[in-house]
Length: 461
Image (cartoon, rainbow, N blue to C red):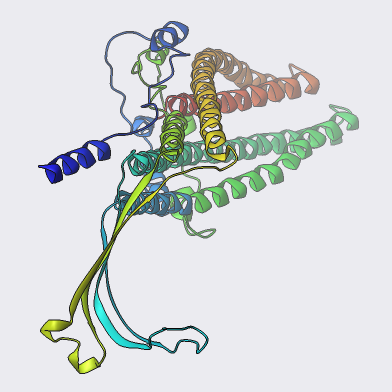
């Protein structure tokens, strides 16, 4: 009966866990987040393959390659594997352990020790050890490692989301630069035509030599912009090959200029969709999840520190055979065992154990502030992204209207200049305005795409 009571008592103690259980801080409530971002209460879902709505198959292929072969993604996957293995290792730290052992002992005592016996024997058998997790220190460490593994899993999502955003942004910048180069080449062709025409008119005395030089200068000014744009194109190509885990020029088939450019594709994004996001989008952002898992991991260490204030009990034993001659080791009379229960009681550590508890509590408060900051930062990024998308929609619409007007004026200007109805200054001014209008639209279209990318990244998609 006493043995049963002892076993029951040990089982009860082994189920005890010291320290506070984790509770999410309520410094920033979900209701406050919804009100701040004007998020609806309805449950909505967002396609994590949102980039496919751009309708560019080459961009889709680049993202697939990046997610498969990018070194940062693969390194994050290995980090998760390590965290999960560490969790499995920690999970059995307080299980009984067994080891096969064997050895030979020969002792020749000192002649100055009275009554000492000579010993010479062989020994083989099974060592067993078990430290009972009475106060939940092992369970708290397992909780700590599980949170670390969850943080590693969230880190993979964070790396993938950031990688996808980088691929899309560099791809948009590449197509933007390629379209800018095409525009400069077309404008240069027109300016060269005007320069030749002006030179002929100057020879005929219809215009001054100064006007002819100015026309040539306008052409040269356009030509001088081309090298910088070509350099930018090469830079974006190299960035994309790096992001996809490839060497330069290995993806030319996907990156070379094409007649169809995403910059001019019709892409409509409704501003009201900015507020139709899941209510828990901020909480599920990878960086916020990482911050919370770090908080959970740190909170568990409080329990571990408290458990270290209490006694620890261990059981050690040996079961096997012992004999003075090796060939008698397996004899039936050679069997033996030893059982060594032990208890260790912290007595005097100069206050270090209590200070360790205070240290872990302080570190947990610090982790809670880090989590609060992550939530606030996420809310700010989402709000900024919403504003950016809305402004880019309006700016792109304005630039489109301006370009349509300038196109009509440009066609009329060429005809009037060829007929000698307007001076060169007026013609060059109009052509420069057209170039500026087209450049502004190219830039605003690219910025619009990138603002949409920023929005999806801000909500963790």
